[in-house]
Image 1 (cartoon, helix red, strand yellow):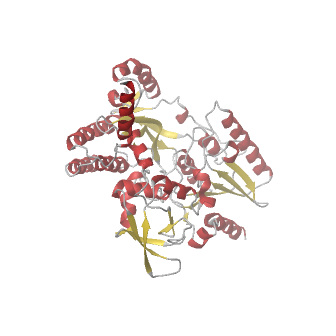
Image 2: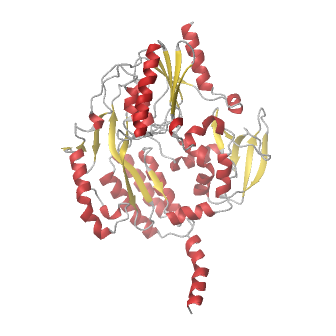
Image 3: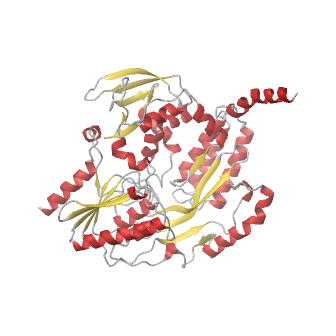
Amino acid sequence: MIKTVVTFLCLILPIGIFGQSIDEPFSQKKMKKDLEIFKAIRIQANSGLFKYRTKKQTDSIYDWADQQTEKSSSYLDFYNIICQLTDYEGSLHNNTRLPKKYSTQLRAEDNGYFPYPIKWIDGKWLINYENDEIHLGSEIISINGIPISEIIENLYKYYTTDGQNITGKRIGITTHFSKYFRLHYGQQGNFKVIFKSVNSDIHETKILKSAGYKDYYKHFNSRYSKPYDQFYYAELKENQKYKYNQINSSTGVLTIYTFAMGNETSQEHKKYLAFLDSTFAEIKSNKIKNLIVDIRQCGGGTDPNDVVTYSYLTQRKFQESKQVWISFNKVPLLRYYDISAPKFLRPLGVGKFNRDFQNRFPIEKGGKYYISEDENEMKIREPDENTFTGNIYLLISPAVASAGSLFAAMVAGNENTTVIGEETMGGYYGHNGHTSFGYVLPKSKIITEFSIDNIEQDVPKKDNQFYDRGIIPDIEIFQTYQDFLVHKDTQMQYTFELIKNSTQ
């Protein structure tokens, strides 16, 4: 009898484990319940809800979402509605995650995915993989009859950026194009691709057989551009995160790939402080006049590595933030909070959590709770004695975010800085960051995450910087097509030439 039961369980378990498809039906009643909870979470807990959008605009998109539920029938339909709402707010720390059973099912899919990674170069989306079907560097015109411009715009919602920034979304699409395509358009048996080959105006057509989820990511991990952009995606070792090179008697290059070096208590942070101290002492001793600060692959990190680095690049007193506030003094909607503790036990353990928030944000004004002047974010900091006073050339890209974009904004605010490259995904004037919150919608189990600290950064007002955009470069330079083919650094080469011409 026991053997029979075990055999029966073995037969039905795979159905239970692998039968959870994001394409399965999902009732409109459940959608409306979760949509109601989702909106309540944003209003009560998310201080960034109206950072870039008015109440009227926000009410309008929720009306749209409500109408969409009445036209929707599947779990994936509802997931896409929540992704659209999440993206609309405009915070790179916003995230929408599928519950584990659905994400596991996606990873197990062995067909239905576009096989090759793509990359944005010179305003076009190109094949970023060497293969025998569509040659490397070919420009995609359409897929399955849909113009590539329309496809890309429909995929923006899966990768959030600050404000109404678009450039940063290209980072997500470059990485996850095939998965995003599947989420929006469903699994495809084949892909009819219309494209243009290199140096040709003739439209060609190729039918590509679909790939599996894992096959696509194998191709991405062998993408053609990997030698150029690998540090952004790599698990960096401690000795790979930053470096300094003196190029000639007057110019040096400081490269920072990440600010993830721990906080004040970590040994890694202390080693980074020693690196900064010795590097800038050397820069001062060698009378370097031009310093290129390259943070193009810096997606963020931990405090205070960003502001400590800035102390070597400024002549002013500064703060990490001018002000910081959250929208509550007790964690709202605790029953939906993403934590493993049973719901009936949560009120017992939340007391200390709430007291920590009340101590950190003790000042209430108009329903907003402002950070204490004693917190590190509000600390007045001094320039280092070895601070650099020459010409700074800051290299930025759409990959720059979070602590990386906070640092970039502060350096960009210097009068002796020239900013070169592409608009960052992180904002110039502020962002929502620091403390991450997660909630689980009760019916769909979709996880929604966001950062609750509404931050105004300590930067000067500049005419070329916009409240709802990333950091805008003074000189916009993209990698060219020819440089893409030979892995040449267009922006660095331009900067060398700029310094050379300025010196002459």
